[in-house]
Image (cartoon, rainbow, N blue to C red; front, side, top):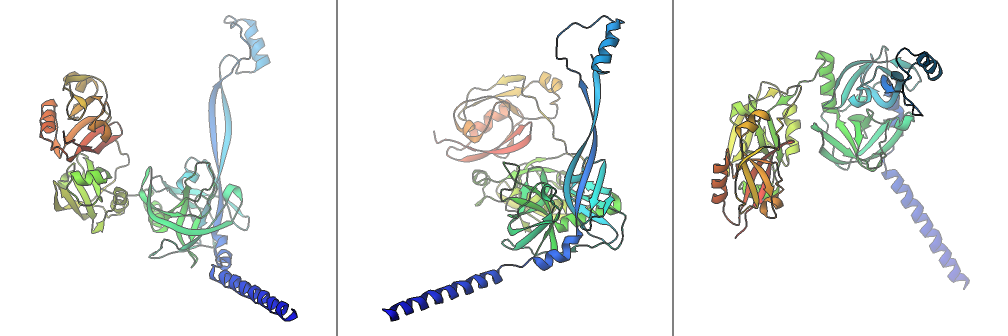
Length: 480
């Protein structure tokens, strides 16, 4: 019995030693961020901004009574009692403050942060890790990339190390330093979840997605790799609560530094431009365009007097590659075009009417403002009967073109959509149908002819114009 207990004790003791060794091995396999933080945390700054606002309000009375007649001595009495705002408008002045982060990129005081951190600021205050404070000058800011370049008057400042030729990989460890909710120099870590993410209204930035804990106040701070090199600028999070939910997005540092260089040199950012509106290729649309797999970017509209128009690009073309880079979805195209050299030719491979074709396009410069023509949804002309698609279309009358400024809009308007293929495809009342099966539709007669020519049991692409812009829809024609 004693021998049995002794063996059991040895087993327990051996198992404990094994677990301790395994824990130590696991700890050694995890990255140690201490040296990185010690070396580069001093180059990370806290940014606070102040904005002066003036709001005009009308004084609300807490009781109801008629106004005294003009010139009545009671007017002076009420103004004395209730203040100068009595019976009229008054101005209220107040300051709003916001917090963010940034990092020093040169010893003479240039810093990077987000545009949205300083966008409407009247005063920008930068606080260093040694608690010195400086009023910063905004050298330039770029809304499309959400990058801003600041300058403080100081010398011999600590700086970060910028990665050169980044080969960031999904699954790689990354670390963020910033001021979430004003807590200076907070450190969080995680991994790269994805690359090349496109976000709404941020078409020109291929974001780095991470699971690093980012919260309000982290914006503009650096994202480091394990070598202590900055690989991105923390910009925004996806959240339904306003706090961290595991989805954080950073601007690639190569793009941010390119923007900073342009802001420093000329105070503005130049980007390449094709002059097209694009959308994704769905499986149904790929079938209608004669493609085996859904990939690329459909040209929904070619803007007039644009590089794309001059090169002969057409509505309904599907862009497959840009300068040899395969496009898996439409969101890949804007960053590639935006980073292209202006006035230099680019090679674009397309599919047109089921056939591949290569086009050379001379890249233009992206205009400051992009405007899409709006259309009205009222004033129908001659109508069609309900067709096999389950919709009623109508001509646009000359009166409507003049009154609603639709002189340059071609097509027919959808007046009614009933249950059927059109409704299943997503067509709605007010859509302007401009193309069916890669053939233009300028009037009701052409529309009816194209509908009659549709092959039963096949999927066809329909181009519609909406207030939000043109869009291709995949419409399946029933067998009967």
